[in-house]
Image 1 (cartoon, one colour):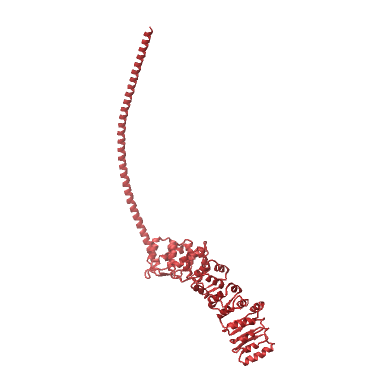
Image 2 (spheres, rainbow, N blue to C red; image 1 turned 180 degrees about the vertical axis):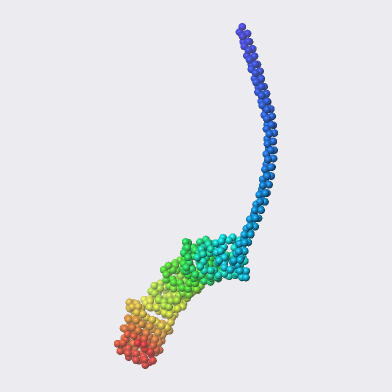
Length: 515
């Protein structure tokens, strides 16, 4: 019974498995059929859409073709219309310009002279009436003038009108020279942007100015830079320029050292500078002259000024020191010395103490003896140095050998200096006269400390002696020993009977006595 039950259970289980397998197969077949139907349906639908899209594309292409044709037709029509409009405008403008030009020619142009009658009036008229530039240029190009004179009183017209006037001048095709051009006013127009640098340069190149003054140079915001720019344009463009007046050379040298001006412009301007006197006594100039720029200052300034004839306030000792250091050639040294116009030179204690005997002689040879206007050398300090054995007698005699002129003067100040050192004026004068055989006249006027004129005894070359206001001199007999004496000046000896006797004897010898 149990076996039957187990058999039956197995049969039931087998039947259930078969049923399950059959149902699964049926389900899968149904799904496959359903999928196949859906695929066929999609395929059919895609073909329908494809056909629909193709129809739409054809429709769009057809529409695009029609629109393109219409646009092209519109563009062609618009182009034709624009061309017609431009031709009409051009014709109208041409007619308008021809009318303006006819008016300009009728009122402002002289056919006989082939020039604009009044260039200023023409420029102002065109500016005020806003005449087209083409019409203005056409009339200007017909002007055959070769020279032009700038009108005066331009400032009253206003900057813009003046700018139009100068632009008209600059455009004249045959113009070779401009007379009466105020370069500073023109430069101010340029700085205020009424004309450009090209116009400024063109006008400068035609300016007939030979002398340019910058004394009244306008005060502009950028100061010296404007002056530098103005001068750079002037020397580059102004063909007739020969001289620049009113430019302080030291200031111009400072501009070079400060980098405000290029060297080639600096030299070009300096070569036209009219300065004829430079005074180195000014403190700022003196500082520059003794600075590291000493050589540049001499070579690039003093020796380049074409009209320089005199240099004042030169420290000859410093100049000599710089020369001996090899910073100046002998020729450059001489060029500077020849512009020193001093008439008197004093050998100072500082100079005598700073230089050796050989250097003093060299200094005297290269500098003192070449001073062109020198008429007298004060040797009292040199004599004192000799007496103090700072220099030799040979050195003193060498210096005296180049003594200029034929007159020797001693002053009360020198008498005091000698007395302070325990020396007598007599020894001083005797030594100098012995070494100066060319001296024929001694002047001791106002030497209130002079007591003895015994120095006359050995000075046979003397022809004139002046002893005015020397009250301490009581013995005038040494004058009688001078064989060539012909003139004597003596005052302040009214009560001196000894002098009266000497005076009588001098007159008998043919000497003129002035008392």
